[in-house]
Structures are given as C-alpha cells and as structure tokens.
Image 1: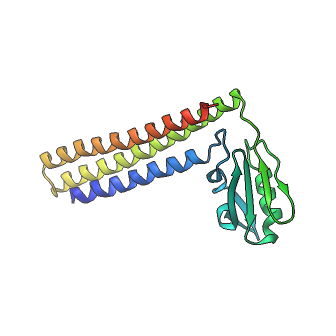
Image 2 (image 1 turned 180 degrees about the horizontal axis):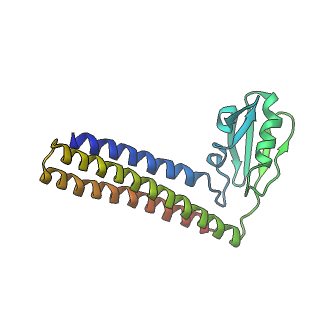
Image 3 (image 1 turned 90 degrees about the horizontal axis):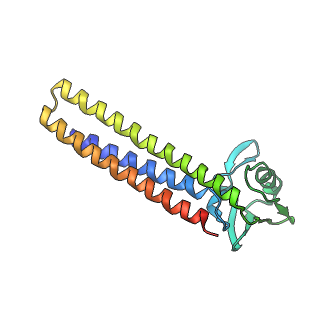
Length: 186
C-alpha cells in the first residue's frame, strides 16, 4: 500500500513538472517558437479549440511564424484569437490561405517581464508538487492510523516522499534556470 501511494505521488509529480515545462514553452523568447501558440484558444464554430488542432504551425525563420489552417473557413477565427493574445506584440497577416506573424525583437524590459512571468509559472509548478506531497503524506498518516502500516514503515516512506519531492522541485528549478538563460540571451 505504501509503494502504491509513493508510486502514484511520483507519477503526479512527473505530470506537474511536465505541465510546468509546457507552460515555459508558451513564454516567448527571442526566437519564434511554434509551442507558444499550441494553447491559444480559437472560437471555432462556438467551441474553444486549441490552435494546434486547427492548423499547422511552423517557423520558417527565426522570428516568424506561419499558420496553415486545415479548414480555410477558420482563418478569420484564428486571426481574431491571435489579435487577442496578450504580450504578442505582432499583428497577424492573413493572405487568404495562411497567416503570417513576424515577431518583433524583444527589448531588455520585455525580457525581464518574461523572466518574472517564467518565475511565477515555476512557483505554480512547485506549489503543485508540494500539494501532491501533502496529499500523499495525509494518505500515509491515514494508513498508519488505520493500522495498515507500522510507524517505522510510514516514517521511511515519508523520508522517501521528501526525496521524491526534492528531486521534482529541482527539475523545475533546472528548467527555470535554462529558460531564464534563454530569455536573457541576446
């Protein structure tokens, strides 16, 4: 039972770390990155749909993005969603079959804003990992209270839980450090 709790906890923490990395990918760096646009929600026939499901996203050059919709009738909706996107700093160009975005060069001030945003996303990731740890700890305490495991076993499991938590928080911190370096690189 203890191993099930720890295994479940580790899986959930892995997902929290992966989710945080995906959030980092949505933050713009000096280069255009198709991952920035994967989670943009487009109102497609009244249903919010991720842009990644409505068209192909490519970056033919360092600071440009080319979006080719699978359904040409979605062009206007995609363009509207991109215009509503905060912190984009670029106007989408619709030529009737594709949408082109030329992203401007990032200023020093903008880079620092993005670093703050990335740190905030990292903190949310750490909080998720800690919440998963808290839940697992409660499960272990309940197991001890019900007599399903001895006090020593639960204590060992809690130490293992702490090491798992530290490992996952370190992964988030490492990803944050890499993203900050990428953002501040001119």
